[in-house]
Amino acid sequence: MTMSAPPVLLFLGAGKKLGTQVPAVFAEAGYKIAVVARTWKEEFESRGYYQVQADFNNPESIPEVFAKVRENVGIPTVVVYNAVQYELDNPEDPFASLAPEKVPRFLSTVAVNGTTPMIAIQHAIESFRSLPPETPGKAFIFTGNILNHSQFKNRLCFGIGKTVAAYGVRYASVAYAKEGFKFYYADERTEQGLPVMRDIDGTVAGKEYLKISEARNQLPWLYTYTKDSGYKDFGEKDYLKTVDSNEPQFIKGGR
Image (cartoon, rainbow, N blue to C red; front, top):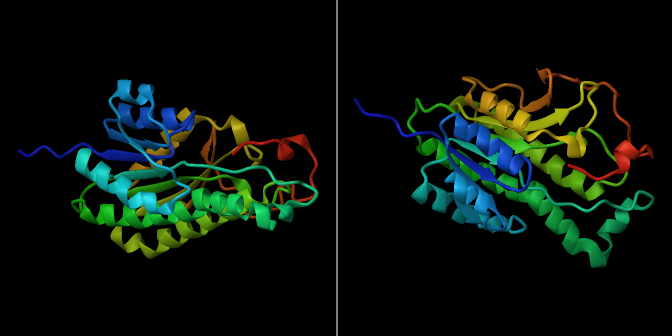
């Protein structure tokens, strides 16, 4: 009897918190792990993860990442894009972030949060097509936030990047459904539907990501979930503060 190869998680953007906690959940479930970050980390080495160094400011880094993982670990069955980069905008003049001298920073923010994950989706699709038809998984998960829905006054550039990613994920979830591939924009919220920002829980994310990646069929592409309830549909109601809010919880930093 031929034993099937273990599934492979490719985790793009392995920083603190989610970068260690999500792969740990998948490793416990029997996945081989490949992590990608700007710098090599001893913690990943000690856990036996395969590491690739890459800078996602450059979308052209993605093909080499997938090639290395495929050669040294295996074909990814689940791809998580978790890289993030942003600076808060001036809340009184957010479009000042697009002044000529700041355009490079804007382009970098859009690349890391929007353009590079689009390239990653394309390579994930090609990877999934290389897997045997009965292989479970075949899922791409983007770590999102509420900015594809709501305009916070100091997050113009960051929100543009996240909105690009959300559009691409939603598009892919429809375009490739016939091939059995799954795509998610995962967004942890409070029970009231507000953003968790820096309080995002990496272990909870790992459990939710594992669940949706192994689901037989596509679940809602906009996968909003809470720590205690799992998936929760907050709908389109106006439960959000918008561009005019000066409340600290909407001004402070956090993904």
